[in-house]
Amino acid sequence: MQTTTPSTPVKPVVKEKDRDPVAAGKRDAAFNRSASFNYFLTDKYEAGVALRGTEVKSIREGKANLKDAYGLLKDGECFLLNAHIGPFSHGNAMNHEALRTRKLLLHKQEIGKLVAATKQKGYTLIPVRLYFRHGRVKCEIALAKGKMEYDKRATEKKRDGDNEAKAAIARSQRR
Image (cartoon, rainbow, N blue to C red; front, side, top):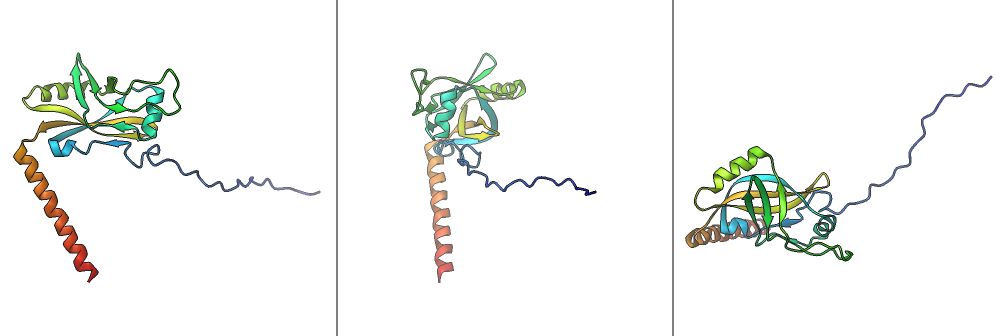
């Protein structure tokens, strides 16, 4: 009599398909470069964004822009205004509006803190970046206070000094 031992089936090695770095959450979908130049950014919060399907697909394509966007607190809710999400390339008649108001999803405690902070003179909510986390679009919003012209000049001078220092280090390493 022959005895057979149960063997576990060997699964073939399947190479994982490379995902888009934006969709995988490795790279930001949109970044507000002018935010840190025009504002002092203090507290940052992660908020979900209530979007339509074609908006999510457009963000994956890289058609989002936060340059002129800002946050608004109204009736215990937080909204994202002027965030431009371009139309989806394969959309139909049900495609979304590019500049519609979108709701930001925050906890009540966070909204309470933001309401108290934005009542102070000069503070506002600015979206800093859009990114994917576990397949969902998130928006990082920051409590911001506007910079004066001399603050912007100081920031530019510091940035230029840092760039010159990096260039000098790179030159010395090449020799």
